[in-house]
Image (tube, rainbow, N blue to C red):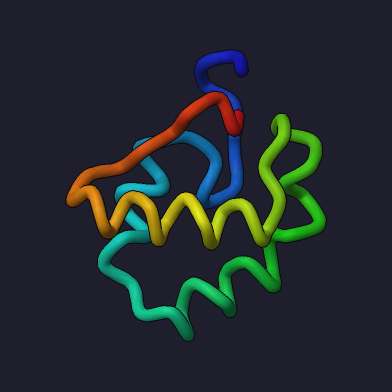
Length: 68
């Protein structure tokens, strides 16, 4: 990923951290909008993003293990 480029919410650990405080409904609405764009940013999919958010919530911090 090149610095200074626009990325959808959920791509990268920092934006996952922003999503941790959102409700599951809000996360679902965001994924419905950004889902088609995610594949162009690595191995992340809408389903994988849901998993990353759940794992991050359980850990208490944002996790990004090479999804992007």
